[in-house]
Length: 235
Image (cartoon, rainbow, N blue to C red; front, top):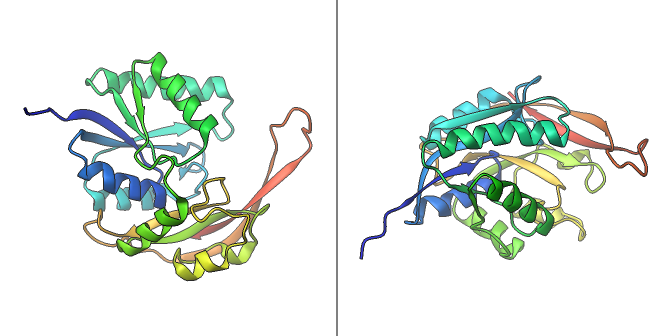
């Protein structure tokens, strides 16, 4: 019996988990990936949380050879604004008979529940190909498949400036403190993938300066609390 592939969109961050997840999703005969979907900071034209420029995102996706849809967000969107913008993008997707949305999340239960609940309201189903896999094994698989990635941002609560701009390899993993997940699944670090089996050619770039940016917490109990990230700019 022949089963038709289901149309899906893929939530693309440009990082390692997203890349490995796309690698598996493309091999899965259940899915017909129509396009990649990426959120960017509308003011600075950079990938949300990662800080990678839109130009490098375009080169990355061109090498993957899949269509890309971009969502531009306000610099500091509240949840109402965020959900409204995402809802509009998904409604457009649904008009093209796309009802699956694929994510590279691994074990954040609250995030998965939020995604599933929001998508269900719009008639979508969330798919998590890497869900509950051992993150050490994921890291090792990513490297062994020939993916190459650079660390573009690190959360200063967990890691110092020296980790920003490093290549994600065995040496990097060995240097991580015990309280840091090897995939950075708790937000400890983010990456940009520039080569690997899903790419037709490597993405070329130069390393720029490493800068520190501090943000105010949205914690109502402690509104003055701040947190920061070290960003390695890629040019």
